[in-house]
Amino acid sequence: MTTFALNMYLYLAEGTVVCISNGVLVICILGSKNNRKRREFLIIVSQAVADTIYAIAFMLIAVHRLRLEAAGMLKSSFPRWECAQHPALVLHDISTPLLGLVPMAMSINFLVSSVAPLWYITSGVNYTTALISVPYLITGVLLISNYIVLWNDPTPTSALCIAANGAAHPIPYGIMLGIRLIANMGSAAVYLAIVIYLTSSHGKSLSSLSNQQRKTHRNAKITLGMCLHIDLVGTQVQTKYFSRLGYIQLHLAFVRA
Image (cartoon, rainbow, N blue to C red):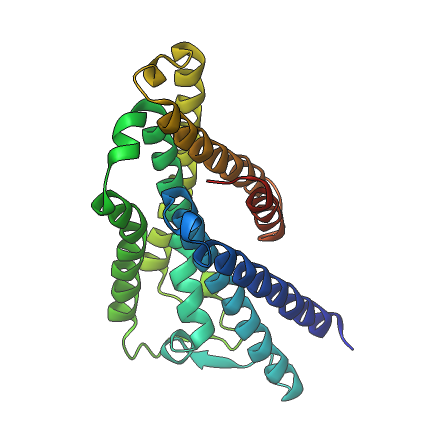
């Protein structure tokens, strides 16, 4: 077995673990009535969906490249439009901005729960829907824009179909990467603002809450705080999935509504 093939099989193994882990995570959340009512858990489901899309994209591209190797076509080229239609590239283009926008939404939610806890607790379905749907709507606009400019593009590109190496149009894909980078930096800035606020406020904003509201707020902060930690760690390591999922699943075992 070649080193190239071994790497592709590792993609498949990692992707399988991620899909299974995310599946268990989503079932744990959606299978519990209490968890389904909690906004922060629904955001985790949104993050799990984004991670799963990314994992499936890598699994599909691994299968594609293994087939190319078996056919001796690793150094051949395809028209850019043909690569762009590959399901792996479609999913990759979806997950690229999504993995920045969803954590950004999570950080904004954490900020709202810290600065305006009473409004956070009493806010309705519209806020939750907007928080979860906006990252996917922005991603949809970027994806459609990418395919509009790529339509029937005959430009030759590597048969490996690498998005950053010509398989995606450089302008929309550059915007996707830019949004992901800006969103990650924005998340870090929001988290810093949260730390500064919590350090200076000493919990004064919680004084108007009842005991039950404080408990609800505390549980939300624990959940979001765990996700904050994993997101910050996740930006510093090469492993794409395992650290975040492990901590969230560990948290699900201990935090109760």
